[in-house]
Length: 46
Image 1: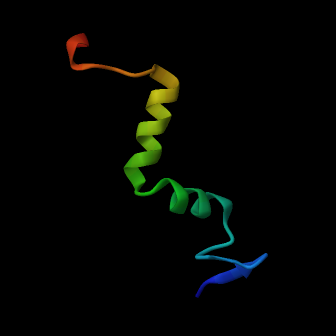
Image 2: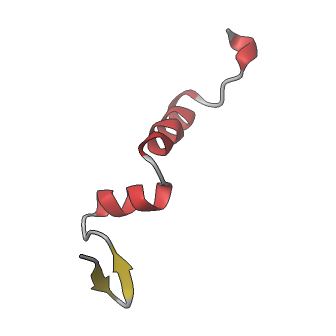
């Protein structure tokens, strides 16, 4: 059941769930976290 807040329908009122809906699948958040913590990596570093 969708919730209607300010005319926008959300799947959940939980902010974490809403953020994951915006960011996409579960791997997107992990990739963004690693980029912010470790910076971009290339294959040449291996």
